[in-house]
Image (tube, rainbow, N blue to C red; front, side):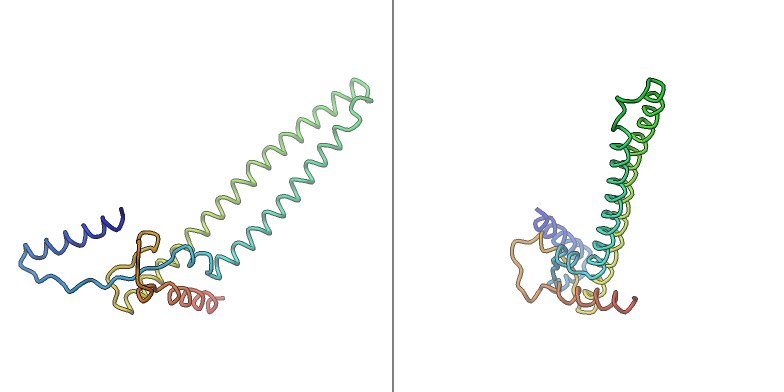
Length: 172
């Protein structure tokens, strides 16, 4: 579908130029990239994944600690006097609320952070794709998921990936 839409768009542009009396350009120079490969093999993605995994592990440890505290509070409640039971029940309810709030905020925080990092990574990728396309004279770069066939000579994924990783490594 995207390939068809691209063809219609290019055809429309060429027809519009012909109507205005402009010469149609030579065949546009087209390349493609494997966006998934770029994302997965970009060093920044790998490092960000490790950082997020560490944060998730830390949050899981904190979660387990809260669960253990709650379990400890619930133990032996039956043997307490009514007054002590009432006090312990209030502690348990407070701990349950704290646990629920922790679960809600911890998950949201990680999702927000992951989404922010992913947006930044895609901006990096887009900038380098545009740069490489300009340097190599490509008029159009397509995600490889949108094409059925493409000659390997039109794939600029490795060049873009090398540029991305070189640039990221030099910034650190």
